[in-house]
Length: 320
Image (tube, rainbow, N blue to C red; front, side, top):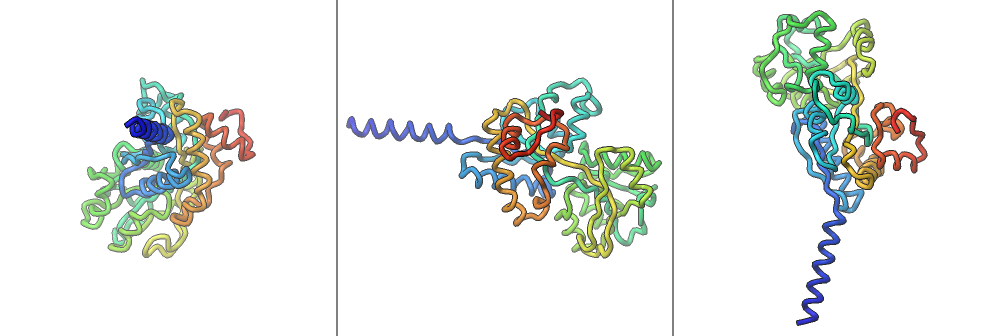
């Protein structure tokens, strides 16, 4: 009986040690079915694989970057989320829609994600060939309250379309069906390219990704210093037989100061050691470089800084 008791005690001790050794993180990115949600699921699997199960991830659906940033100060350690760094800076400065809120100064950088490519999508038979053609049309500027919606509305204002485009009262997840059924004339989605949403839509109806002219693109880049020119290669989507000029924005994976150094280090190390494997599953991961994280301009988490220092990457004072 004594031996049984000792054995049971040892078993419980080992089980307790195993539980304590396992680290759980929450990954929050975007709505289910979007390219960023798919990437987040892939990231969760990469973390599990790289750490042999030491780090396990729970993937949470999100309405988008604005929700992610707003939740960050209220979540406990181990909360990892994606957003463009410009939105973090807006929150830290108390700009819309973060007025009167606090806690955003504790947001810290982990690694760089595939950037956002702005897609302005219409039916190919709509007769709309450029952004100016959206005047008087019904358009979904992105998911409600999302960064994409903010970007679309900023573009409308920049080109004198504010108040002249009818905003479709349809959630972005229902936008493809609304476009097929001619309930709306188009919609915007901010995602890495190619995005499965548009590949699937283009396989059912002819679509057009609206290009920005040279002068239009220059105006966007002048107004938003965080944006960069992006070309969607020909044949990225069904029926798209020419390159499409648009713009994109960087995206990062962030956490907060509540996450302990060891966890942040494990997450960052796991990501970069699994990058090649991730790229085999989804090519958007391939072009990323560790040093690019510095350009996000938001302070590094100490655990992330430890990894980059070990990797021999210079860390600017601005993000230490």
